[in-house]
Length: 175
Ligand code: IMP
Picture 1 (tube, rainbow, N blue to C red):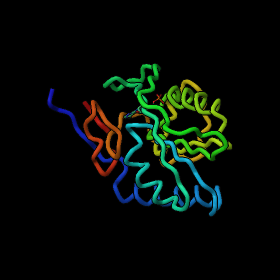
Picture 2: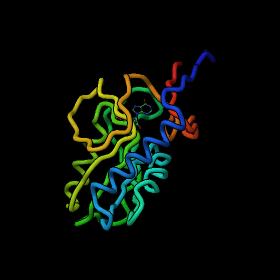
Picture 3: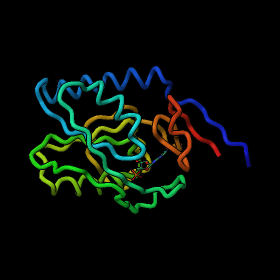
């Protein structure tokens, strides 16, 4: 009790450099003139998305999906609840789904199926963090910021019980 520790895993500088790199690569892949509909998965991706859309530059639309899958604990329940849907149709658009972290893959799998039926012109995924150890379902992720070990991390949008989202770095949380 009261012994929890935070250990920096990815520094603020490393995050910023990688996000700039991802943004440049994404813009290059889509093309200078392409209009990209960025769909941020709330709440975890909001900090990453804010930096990433500026790094992508050019024509970008921002949409959000509210998802709740954790219910305050540190293990995935596999139950995905949509708490906020897109405000506009994505039919015929280049859609880029922005996640904070892919762990079991259950959330991403659910969201991809849900978005595909809306018939976007293309659908790609960028995740800041990938924790492949616990993968329960294979998901195709086109852009990964960092691959990390199986540890519970917080910061830069990621939370534990709604805390730590405002840390400018990614830290391993030890209870
Ligand atoms: P998945 O469905 O198991 O892939 O989990 C995806 C969601 O679980 C993410 O969008 C996060 O909200 C949450 N999550 C998974 N691992 C972590 C972690 O280490 N820290 C904070 N949230 C996590």
